[in-house]
Image 1 (cartoon, rainbow, N blue to C red):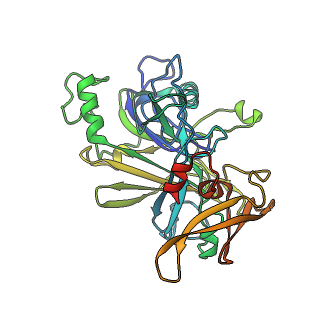
Image 2 (spheres, rainbow, N blue to C red; image 1 turned 60 degrees about the horizontal axis):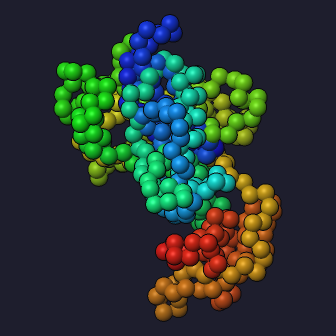
Length: 386
């Protein structure tokens, strides 16, 4: 899986000898990305991993929770080169995902311990960038108490990808997604107040001294850029022995929302091979957000969806006969709750068949079943989701 994208403010670029410092970031695990203001030095990528500040002690993990959200994904049909580097185009679609946290790896919240690990990987394998500040982290309730903790973002399985998109004949549908929101005006104010690595001559409306809208083909020592990078969170023992640098999940489609405008971003990423669609080959390069944004006057949201498969349920978690309740439109045109039960589990496709009181049935993923279970551990949140 890959961490969700995160923004990092760049610092100064550093030569391999290590005189100047700079950094960018990437993350990977349940697929995702991260933005960080960085100077040129080396680091790795994660989806919501902004401004990595390596800590000696990790903050407590978030409280386990389920939070279903939806994102509207633009069509991927710009010929001749599709933004996802796929062979086939895709229509616009709505994706649902769990923005919560669970110790089994589901949900798009990334805990602090994993966040620090990603930062160390970036620092080791991408030493040419030094992270000055990271964006996109959120305050959430910590486990075991009412205090707050920090959470980053990673990509997670699309709740609707397994059934709804297939039912509606949406081809080439994504299997994982996430979203990161960065309030740039607020981040700018915080940087002014804290003077976080800001040059003494930097303007108040640009404390990081970023050259917004400037396109650079070659970076030099001292350059500062807002970079988006990603790393896989799960790696085999063989992969752990190789260089750990930025890697977009396969079939990554990235779009940015700024004010009332939406834009599809094209990435340098692996291409799906026509002779064998199972293969994705090519180079991956981080995305320099500094060239895309004209200024820091508006908040931005990054929505990412990929064809990288993340969580897989090997065995049925919910028993046949488990009661569920879900709202549907009744014969009178009004929404009302319908009770139902889990009838069977398809081990091949990892889907549950749920039959409702009126005889209608649907196939759901484990996460979708969890959100409508009558005896859910968090009944109040279950009611809200229904």
